[in-house]
Image 1 (tube, rainbow, N blue to C red):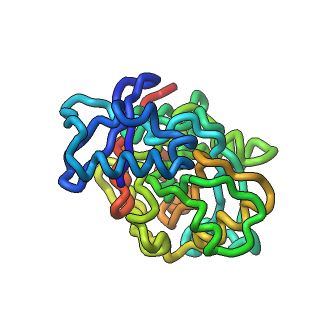
Image 2 (image 1 turned 135 degrees about the vertical axis):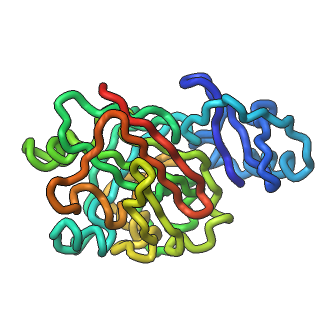
Length: 285
């Protein structure tokens, strides 16, 4: 299933995109799409049955904002330097273990919402990423098979980053990762049954129509299953938590000087095969 949330910010309603591409209202079946729903197999079954029976009212998508596909996110765990080609382009060694940092849940916005260039920013960068959404409480998982069984689904994430804040201002990476609007998510939460192999997904990103990133999750240093298993050794993952799994080569940081960092007025578009497409216009904060 392709689950999503539509409507004005803070007042989104749950919806599903049916097999024919028609947007259907879920508000008569479930209250919202969140961790509690993802952990409830019966509720997911009701959605699936209603969609297959054609019982859900259609929504007119014209002029309808698409919000983040998941409400009440607990935490956003991010994996840095997780693609061989991205590590090479930035001159970094491939890490021996996954690099973990966090984004606050309030950085998450809709897939087509405005992204704000922070005040004082000179190095705002783009990163298309596969997001993993947790569906079952995960702690101390022992195998990759067990890890994948705890995944509810997948989504497109844009891990927007401010490289000067991240790298040049001291401390951890968090200052360059947690600016407002720095995690567009969606358009859909695609349930795991529709993604049989998360290591066989193509990722693309364009800036002002120019292709910048063209990669595949096959390049991940630590595949999705290992990332989920590994993270569960250090923290408990709850239904509705999100893991951003890293970005392939092609970011501005890896380009020759002068590096083409983002500015107000730029338009970024990104997509992952089968998971949908995003489009953001950048404005000054």
